[in-house]
Amino acid sequence: DAGITQSPRHKVTETGTPVTLRCHQTENHRYMYWYRQDPGHGLRLIHYSYGVKDTDKGEVSDGYSVSRSKTEDFLLTLESATSSQTSVYFCAIRDGGTSGGPGEQYFGPGTRLTVT
Amino acid sequence: RKEVEQDPGPFNVPEGATVAFNCTYSNSASQSFFWYRQDCRKEPKLLMSVYSSGNEDGRFTAQLNRASQYISLLIRDSKLSDSATYLCVVPPGSARQLTFGSGTQLTVLP
Image (tube, each protein chain N blue to C red):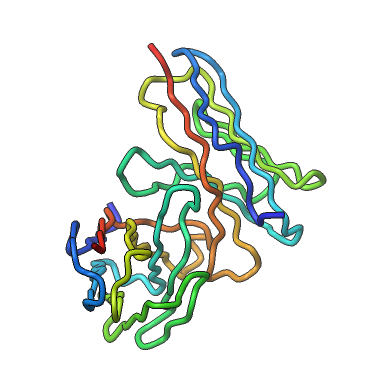
């Protein structure tokens, strides 16, 4: 158990409303990631963080912003939700030390977001 | 060509069978490879890491063929509990990002 929680686990919201998803970790890992998973597309990286206040864009970052003001929390915000952002969102962490390679990520349980 | 490609399946095999999946990748500079398993409506979980020619863990064997740019996952003596989607993962060059395949669905039948 990598000590990762996501909240909320399920959310239904209306088009145009702002939505914030939270990822919380308890083990002080340096790297944190936000992915979305859709049928036929697999997991796609939205944004990632390599330290407090250090973030960068992933493959599908348009319409999303992130913040990391402390090590344990990584927030994903949809400024104005659209139906195309209906998806399952996964947070992941990676230990930046020598014990874990770049592909050894540990995922949270996911958030199912529906935008109507 | 996609960075990572997998046969989506589904693979339906009887309990006790041996099954193998392939994953092809386009970046010849990739040095490490990973297999994840994802159960229905659950998060992906790391199954195996491959840093050299291959790796074996019990009934699971991962092999790397650099010349042909593919990795394979072999499952021997399949169990019902092996039913899941298997995701191939390749770091494309940046140590900070990964490319996930779309997954291969396996169903082990009693």
